[in-house]
Length: 322
Length: 213
Image (cartoon, rainbow over all chains, first blue to last red; front, side, top):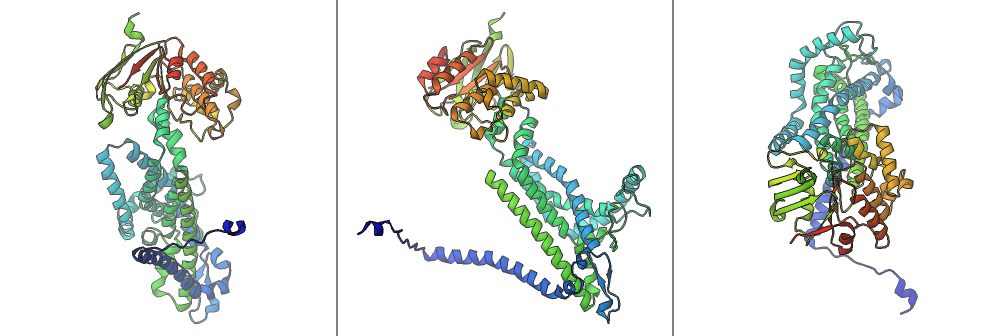
C-alpha cells in the first residue's frame, strides 16, 4: 500500500440498531412537524393578507385608522394597525417594567432565602399561576383590578400630571394601558421568575463560597456573583415574558378600550393591541376586513417570533456560560 | 493577656455523612499549623467550618475568646475576619485583578477609594502590582496564586486558611511563593492553618503539623 493511499481518510459506516433508527425518526418527525406547522401558519396568514400589504404597503403598519368604508367598495377602506402596534408595545413594556423587579426578588428569595419546604410550595404556586387561562386573569382584572386601578390612576394623575405620559386631559380612567399592563405583568411574572430561578440556581457555588470566605454577606455574594452570572438568562426570561405580553388577547380585550388613535398616555382609557383588535373585529368582519385581520395577525406573528427567537438565543448563550 | 484570647479552638463534630468526624484543634496566633491526612479525612471540611461556610454538628469554634459557632451562636462568615485560600483559588472571572482584591475591603465597608488603595498596596506587597488591570483568565498559575494571596491578606484577617495553596503552581515558582507566603503567615496576631499533601510546603509554612487520620 502506498503512503498516499494510507493517508486517505477511512470510510466509517455507522450501523444503528432498528430501535434507535425508529426512535430517531419519530423524534425528528416531531421536531420537523412543529417547524412545518409554524411555516404553514405564516404561509396561510401571508396568503390571506397579501392583498392588504399590496393595497396599503408599509402604511398598513404605520397607519392609525381602521375604517372599512363602504363594504361594497374595498377602495374606500383605510386599514392600519399602527395604533394597535403602539398599544401592544406600550402594554407589554409596562408589564415588563412592573414584573421584572418582582420576578428577580421572587427568584432570589426562592433560590437563596426560603426554607426548602416553602421553596417547593412557592415553585408549585408559580407553575400553577403560569397555567391559569388568560380569560380568568381578564375577568379578575375587569372585576377586581379595574376599580382599584381607576382610583389609583386618579391619585397618580392628580400628583404627577406634569409628566406628559401621565397627564389625562379627559379625566376618563379605567380600561387603560396601565390596567392592561398591570394585569399582563401578573401573567408574565411566573414565566420570568421561573427562568430567573433556574439561572440563579446555576450560579457557581464555589464563587459564592469564595465571596463568603472574603467576608461578604449573602447579599454581597448575590450582588457580585449571582446577579452578574444570571444577567443574560434573565434577559432571555424577560423576553419570553415580553413575547407573551405582546401576543396576549383576551386579558387585554377585557381591560383596554379599543380606540384607533396612537395613545402614549398610560392612564387614559384608550388603546388596544393587535391581538385584541383581531378578537374584537373577527366575528363581524367583511371578507376584505378579514384579510386585514389576517395581515395584522402576520405582523403580530412576526414580532412575537422575533422576540422569542431572540430570547432563545440569549438563554442558550447564558447556558453555555453556565 | 489570657492565652485563649490568642487561640483559635475547634472542638467537636464537623461534617455530614461520610465526611463526619470528631476534631480537637488549637491554633495559636503566630504559630501556623499544618494539616496532613488522606483525601476525605475532613481537612477541607474543618477549614470550611472555621470559615463559617459549614456549621459545627456539635461542639464549638472559639476565636480569640469569642464563640463564633456553638450550636446556639453562629457568626456569619463576614463577621469572623477569616479568609480562605481555596485549592482552585476561585478568583472572580468577571472582575479585573484589582477589583478581585478590592472585593474583601468593600465587603467590610471600605469606601471605593480606600479599597482601591489597599488593593494596590496588597498587590504590590506580593509582587503583582503590574497585573492590576488584567483579567484572571489571562494569568499564569503563579500569577493567580499571588493575586489570591493579595486578596486574602488585604482584609487584615485574624485567621487565614489555606487549602493546598500551591496546587495550581509549577515546581519552579513554588520556592518564591512559599517564601512570600511564609512571611505573610508570620504577621502578628494571625492564626494560620495550612492543608497540604506536600511535606516541603508544610515544612516551609507550618510550625506545627497535625495529622488527620
